[in-house]
Image 1 (cartoon, rainbow, N blue to C red):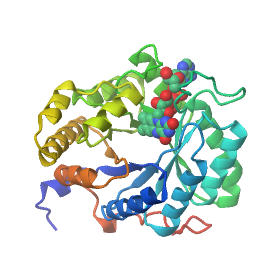
Image 2: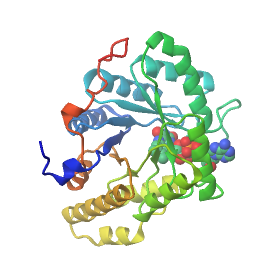
Image 3: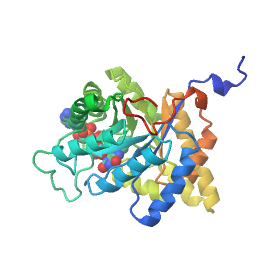
Image 4: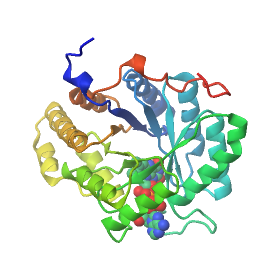
Length: 316
Ligand code: FAD
């Protein structure tokens, strides 16, 4: 059958969302509405953040467990070196594998704001966490008989605040690949050329793993400002001015969604294999961005059913 659609001829693009564990019963209720809305778009996975202090360990694991049990979504569990001892991290990794998680994003986590240093014996870098995940995976693989765990890592379109240079960031990304990272998701970025630039520098240095752009809906001045402060990434002042000058929420949403779509399209044009949307546990802006992006997605029948109720043998 001849295809008449340009979209269906385009290479399929992966789609994923980031969620964070709810901090109250009311937040949990609205999160589950969001999860239902996001599930209807059939993403490849949803990632669940982990507090660097380790304080939300139980809410994170509970959310992941419920995603596996009650939805068709495949969770990608974030995990950080900071906040837990290597022994505790090994236990969490084993717990995640036991509930059916097959994707972990290995992160160092942000250092405590009080300038304190992580406890003696903590894992120092994300690279050390990748090693630990692979060791735990090896120990449990005989028991679980399940497929390999996909390990993701962070990548930085703009210099990581503690790093001496962008070139050093690329060396670190290459080291994470050598330690067994399967893919990377980028930190937020606010300028269209930044993803393409990262990809060029990474490929030139020998990084071959997929690098997925992490894109946040740019509809809230407060949120962009806050995230800029948290991550050390400078927001686009032109966009901030346009958002501030908008005379209604609807106009602000139109400007913000438009800018986000431009950012994502520029990344796709540069060869991005997917789009990871930072949702902040809200679906409206994420879905508007998705609607305008019209990503070439594989037809449902072509896709492996999502990871719900994987049997002990790993077969669906
Ligand atoms: P690393 O790769 O370990 O790098 C940390 C610093 O050490 C960098 O400056 C790097 O240049 C340097 N470095 C690394 N390896 C070496 C080495 N071998 N030799 C010398 N220097 C080295 N934070 C959370 O707390 N929870 C989350 O859920 C979370 N999710 C995130 C998701 C994404 C997609 C991204 C991009 C970030 C996320 N973060 C999260 C933030 C992340 O924890 C911070 O950016 C943190 O400061 C660095 O984490 P990393 O994994 O990149 O660390």
